Length: 187
Image 1 (tube, rainbow, N blue to C red):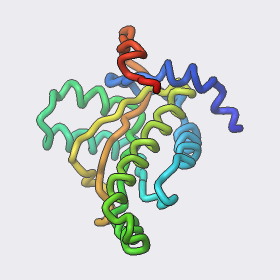
Image 2: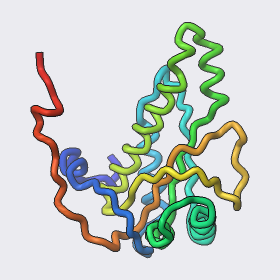
Image 3: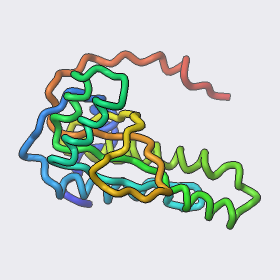
Image 4: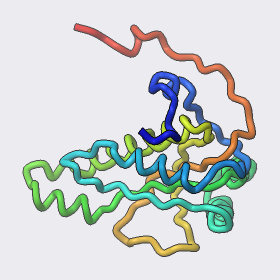
């Protein structure tokens, strides 16, 4: 096991939080982010189609991306600045060509592949988030539609989510959960 990942699974699940106000943390390395993503790529996908794609934005490109979001989305500028001040952003995409190929290869399941791809992408997002959490890297999941203007992206890819990451620049409140019995039923 990579020494970058040392926490227990239960501790990681409980410590993972949405940190929306970030700061640049010079101790966060490209290697840490790369290793978190490599580990998360072991997440499952239906028929092992692996249709999820990732782009990591850092430094000037990350800053410019969030400036574009400020211009194009109806959201408080201060919220976006909290994302922009971090070390970078992981962008999560789905490759529609891969999904279409699976629909052709397995026509019996055609109606399910798009949904399964979204579920697989969500698992990948969560896995990246947990891998970052084990390294004390703050992050959150966002859902904006603005594409980065600074890079060329395959036209078959659809942007699903952004995960800005960096050092935490806010404290978090205690979370309150619904009672177990309200969420889980046994028969």
